[in-house]
Image (cartoon, rainbow, N blue to C red; front, side, top):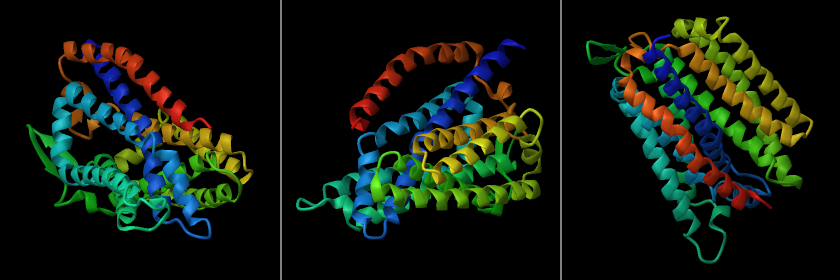
Length: 335
């Protein structure tokens, strides 16, 4: 393996780890916004307050991982980052707009009332928060669909899209809905671990519903991948990737079993493992391309000196960031 291959692979692995962290943490926050919007029943107030309590103290910290992924891509794979930014300008910027609206509406709703718990009532800011929590993961899932569909071409420095708006294809839209369902499932599983009594049963029923929808959508996306993204379908089911995909399915089954049998601590571990393994499977299927079929990782990588500096800087950054995040969760999540 050449030096450029070695360091570009390590840089790509670091970016993939950031994607996993963002999916597990911010994904659950997006899902929390979904359940906030669709809070119902006699415990509607308690449901919204549970979402606020679970994500309120730490939700901003989760976007550190999105920034991390963008910085690694921009620094280590500048040509690939430029191609993705141009090709996915519309869905990326709409997703970022949704993330900003989520933040603003979450804060404004929290301070809109002096007399009552604002999070417990349906309000204009609460609706904005919920709708933005739906839009952002859908758009990020659509962007994932465009990349895996092979709808981006980068030839001689010119970025072209396959069709006028490839993100509007059935396959891409199905990926967006699957991303939303997965976020909702992850949030419901997490919330069963942070509530008790009848409120826990509310989120347990939501986890069962979201998990069923996620399983159905995953089957539909695989079928659409075979029809519209066949290169990705065959790579996803290759000998290199299949064990990881099967392990992800096993984690999903374990999470479903844990939810049904009310083993909530197990369900959280299995659900997180499922999401992490699915993203790892995607990374293995995509490798060695950043953008199929024109941009290989080693071809769009920065000089070796830059890659080496970034990779060696990561442990130093981790020594600062990870203990800080652990302390933040420890302080605000402990009972």
